[in-house]
Image (cartoon, rainbow, N blue to C red):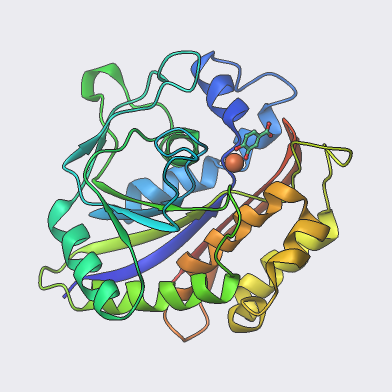
Length: 284
Ligand code: DHB
Ligand code: FE
């Protein structure tokens, strides 16, 4: 039986990808951001997941206003790195896990969550920046991410967006799906995006440290309560793009009911226009 061993939460700021790709990680502005992921890179190497189920949002890259799936599961064998306007990032393509993805789709759809099945999708910074933060730059001699990844895209860009409650319950259905897969796979689930940020309008640049840190506290200790927070509260308190945080509730919902072990917690402002938050929770 497969099992979810741990969950990882991290912001996905595109400028972090550019800083990595341009070799700027030791510059004074960026050094404190990347410092927050040093523990994580070592941890991931020894945790050795077989598959990462990576919850992220597409930023009008693979999808557009022409088609807006609320929840989309990647069932492809591989995914190309998207060109977001400056050419694709110089990172490896993403290898999928079609068998586990198809199993999860079957189980979760039968559990009444409507997923869109995606067999072709270019993945943008929402997925590649978390991989870069957690894995570092793969060496040219072995230019690959450490394991297969199942991309799971959530619409948090075009309203209506799913509630935190639905995301949390979906996470529970994903846990059940993974635990009913025959092979003994070590699966991690990552929730990405956030934390507080607003990229547009009169409040552009908004950061709310209190909201972010309360969110981290409650994500650890009271996820079911946190899941009741309505989306309008995210937008008011954490900015229009702060709504990306509902994706963290999918990963949290997929964890066991027993309290998790907090392996790492990090918070830093600023990175570009965004507050960077990061957590690693292990199932006990
Ligand atoms: C920024 C942050 C995001 O989450 C994003 O998707 C795009 C831009 C930013 O900080 O500039
Ligand atoms: Fe974003």
